[in-house]
Amino acid sequence: MTCLLLWVLACGCGGGYECRTAADCDDGLACNGGESCSQGRCLPGTAVSCGHGFTCREPRGECACAAGYLPDGDACRPDHCEVPQGPVLAVVAQGTEIVFTTTRDYLLQVGQAEPGDSLPAQWRDGGRVTIAADLLPARLRLFARMRFTDCRQEMFLADYRVTEAYPGPAGSPTSTALAADDPAIMAWATGFVEPVEYGEDVDPQWRTPEKALGPAEGNSDGVFSLGRGGSLTVTFATPITDGPGYDLAVFENALDDGFLELARVAVSSDGRHFVEFDCASLTPGPVGAFERLDTTRIGSLAGKYRAGFGTPFDLAVLRNKPQVLSGQVQLNRITQVRIIDVVGDGSQRDSFGHPLYDPWPTRQSAGFDLDAVAVLHQADGG
Figure 1 (cartoon, rainbow, N blue to C red):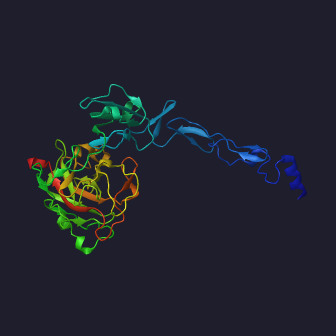
Figure 2: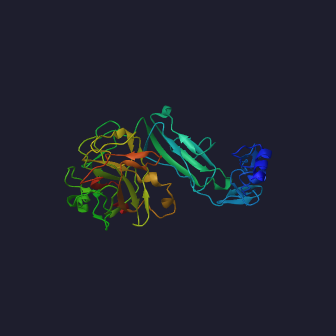
Figure 3: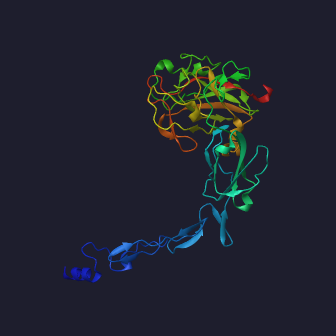
């Protein structure tokens, strides 16, 4: 006890002492810097800064190429090239920020140009583009690539139509709604994949996937309720192909322009690999079971239009997706479309990181009520 008291007095620490020397604070790690002792308290060190593409390696605190990078002289270069990924919607609202990412934290460059231009006039370092309001109304082409010189041929390229808000309700000037009797419709879904992924809170009378086949009926009875978080995959007699403009449309049975139940949409050409359309939701907070949504805050989610009108989707917006670039999903021969109910409590996110809200919780026929899936472009000249 006497020795401990003398140690505390010599240290000048008082009863809450931690250290006498830096050795008492050493955590045995080099990369987080050397700890020090000041007035009996341990202070953290300054972490080793290695630069982009490097990481600090224990136990000696040496900088080496990080995972995903290879030595290149005094620098580190990516061990592979890839197309940066960013959300693509046929229509985006002004002020939308497009954030590009890669599987590793690679340095990126972005640019923009007029549709039809093969390259931007200028590349800018970084991975973010904010679509400014002064572009209205406009169409623009966005580009993104890895900054490393050898990877600049692997390039993201997509066209966007910029509007003040997302498309309005059916019948409004900005709407993209497709009427069930539109002559552009070439065919409808003819089958579905079993077993069906039923969601929660669906009574047996609504577990009727066959009602999602054939033409849209536009009423409250002729539908299949997915249930909360459920999904249904429908098939077609002739594959869907990527043609000019929209290629398919999904119909729900919403009673009016405000009571909307939403779903995400994915497509496949082999029934094993699916790629999902990006979507946007600017609904600011939770929506009660019988509350309403604003269509102009919803982008590329099925169910944003009232019964009798479908939400259209353009396969071209999927061209930069890894599943398409690798050939796993072939946009000229889409054989299956999957409709996935949005769980509207905000636990799921849109393609921009915003929470997804729709009426929640609903009962008995919970979730998206699928009326039909229409085909606007068929493969093989069908």
